Length: 86
Image 1 (cartoon, rainbow, N blue to C red):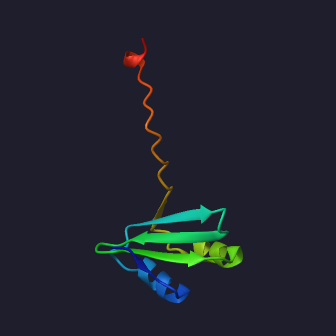
Image 2: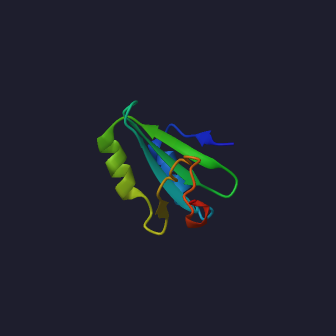
């Protein structure tokens, strides 16, 4: 179950924990917000920011050891396989 964190300082502390394995950054253009997600051993922690300047500063302050995973592309349900073309 994901947990939402409202405080930026608390979120950075969570990012620096030993069990924090990966980070994802998702930009929502319709709502004009940026969502940071950090995967820890037990929970997925999220932080939603509406200010792009704060989001850029937070992105730079993430620990360098934490790799940033790009978000997965949505599944379209269409497979193109060379063997299936007939």
